Image 1 (cartoon, rainbow, N blue to C red):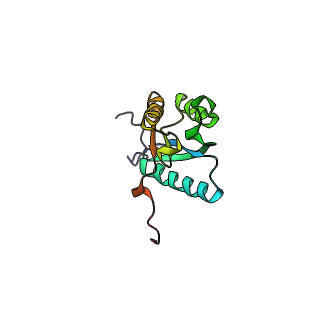
Image 2 (cartoon, rainbow, N blue to C red; image 1 turned 180 degrees about the horizontal axis):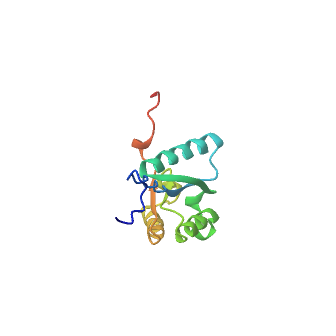
Image 3 (cartoon, helix red, strand yellow; image 1 turned 90 degrees about the vertical axis):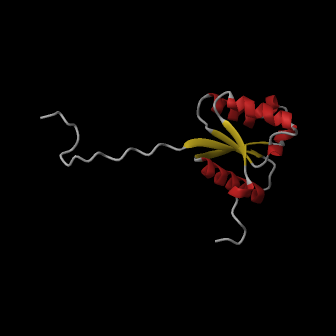
Length: 132
């Protein structure tokens, strides 16, 4: 006789589903309500494609035209990344965050240092208009 902690049926309970990794959308605060809603939906689709759960949107006014130190929203993103709370950050496109490839690469590296991936919405993630 063995000490078997399993129920008499011999079945084992299914493993708990792994929690999905958290992501945030980083958006321009100056978008009108319709554009902001659409951008957030696109970011949610991208998060799903990555296996992430979009937990919130963080905004800054005119982020690409503002120094990093003056972007309260971006600083919040970096703090969340540094604290291990994120797997990803999604922007609609690179110009939301950066005016040039060098600035984009710097943002990618800043988040990557914390194990966080920066990505954008991609056309293949978006629903086809008129498709059901």
